[in-house]
Image 1 (spheres, rainbow, N blue to C red):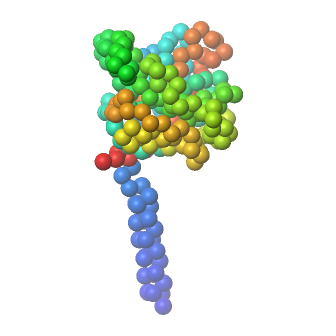
Image 2 (image 1 turned 90 degrees about the vertical axis):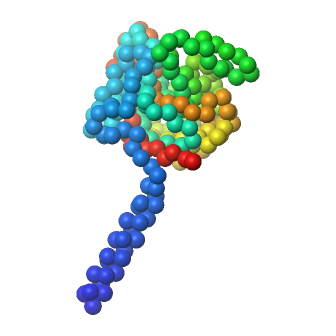
Image 3 (image 1 turned 45 degrees about the vertical axis):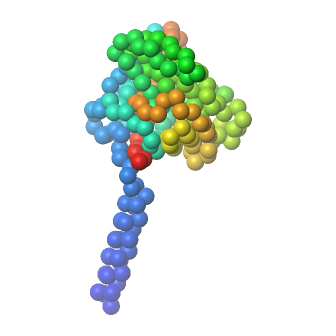
Length: 229
């Protein structure tokens, strides 16, 4: 009898482990939990630190938008990440983005080319917006074309954002399709093929000389990515 019970428990544990493995199939941590190996800072001089299992971005006076960028480029993928932002700060997560060591001509679509300043991160950004507008999860084209998919017509996504608390993003890039979810609620659904591959980056928005915003923070954790064929 005891042997049968033990056997049943063992089978249950094995089945459970297979289920967990299937749920996490293909996902890998983008952040190793120890240091910022695999990332390079570009743009401004906001400060990035590690606290426990979190990457913390802290705003700094009189510096432009700052980005902690992966050294590796990603094309088609699913990105899952938790974030928490100070209500006074703006932030975002860059995807399929670019940055160059020297001023470089870049494609703005429709045959339009523009010179991008050196070290200026540009490309798709999944907005983190704690303002009353509540467009977290919308897609903004940083330093290029501006808003591509705001949330004016998606109030449910706006309501899904949790102020001064942890939120969860799911971001899917497949070909010319970019989709986002905030706390399980569909947010942006964009078709755009201008950039098919690029960096992922964590943004701390510039605050100019606003001393009330100095030292405000945005935090990220559980950053997991699954690359798609």
